[in-house]
Length: 452
Ligand code: TRP
Image (tube, rainbow, N blue to C red):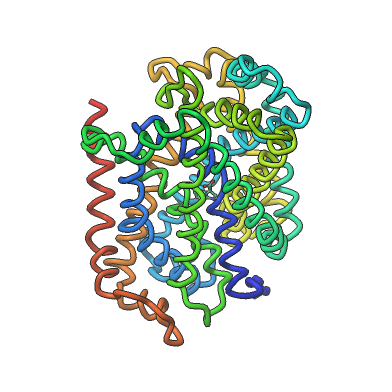
């Protein structure tokens, strides 16, 4: 067997997994969904999902990967040969392709916005800012080109071998990103109208706590943000040293990811509510692209601030696209015996074809902008299918796998190897065996039911 490589250290794994976790999901997805889900009610349910459902599944994924040292499909088939459990890895491979297909379109927007900031288009005329987003996203070929740029960059990194690259980029980037977010939050919180934004963000509307679509969205977002449910963290776990304690490393990743998402909310809502006539629930995917320019125009040197911010966001997106592409690519290498180069080019080609309708569906081509019968745009359709359904379903089966097929005791052996710290073992067993599968099944089931 060839040397699969490994992280240089415990901190290497934490950085790479955080690089995968922190991305557009935190800064674009989280505020967007808080807006659609009615504010603080969403935030509350989101935090519950992270703590009680996603975190137990996260340590399980890492344990499976590290036990087998293989990519997802092979991991499941190694632990339970001659069964159909490998299909759980199979869902993950498909989800990687599906998520990357729309994620790369949004990553393209952040690159364009770095350019718009630098050239002063964002900070110049305030009334143009909301129009700018609609105008820009309706320029179809520009969007397709930017998507291709994102995918080609991801593919290049993956062909060149990923591990040291991701570690280094993340190590340099994460502190800068956090500092910038804190500065922006301070400025946003001192704008007139900020108090109303804070109230919206932090005071739950009890009626929304009963809304099943808010639960479904929060669950999907929690999985998405932690890069969970499709074997990405499993794959990263397969490169992890046997001496590293899994629980402690996972807590770092989950805390960092949640902190950055919450921080993004402390920027967007205070800044948003300082704009007259702002309504977060109708802003849709353009939310941050309409609110942030307004914030940058309030800062001295706003062009530079804006450009730096969007460049950082593009790089954060790149460390995430890498982990998305890595799952289907490592699958082709392991299970089909293709070379790494052939796997990367083939998978990237498929993703690009699927990405075109998402790139053209924001005002450029009517058919993809308002799909017949469904009435939503293609990008939103992809995000619903893969985020809100495929990831939680992948997580559901991962929990079942650990709970009934592989066994919680065997998983715990891996989790506590070399006397690694692992808190509340009984509680974790209870969560993974009962709470995770039942809660996910209930939320997905009720969502399906409510569609009729
Ligand atoms: N977590 C990333 C974000 O928040 C997106 C992402 C990267 C992802 N890899 C993943 C989501 C694997 C699900 C599965 O932007």
